[in-house]
Image (cartoon, rainbow, N blue to C red):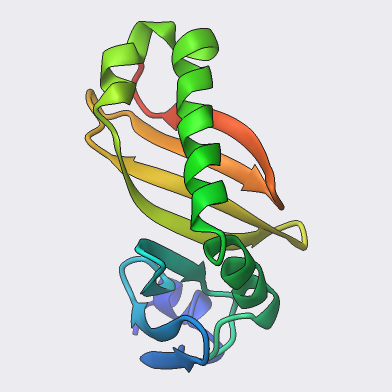
Length: 146
């Protein structure tokens, strides 16, 4: 084992499969460093936080958000419309062609959050919609601005 592998070694190994009473089976993905699942038609990821099980507060938040798929879908569609109308008018056709890929649940500064990513991106742009609780913070992209 090399120096960096030793330095960044996990304290605990994540369980390969986690069964949640509401969301069902979540499987560990080494590539995503998250547990992946599907609930109410949405693919989602629960981020890893140095424990062998998904964090309870993140799971609770995910259940709450995914339990209301109509609200979530409408918030994402409204963020996309707002981006096309106000912030990213140059990329209207690209945004129209995006398809929601996965909802990522994670913690930042002890606050549970979401970002939704999309497939169909062009020119190395990675589009996402961010949420803090039930507040949509809008649509943005990372990467080359083509």
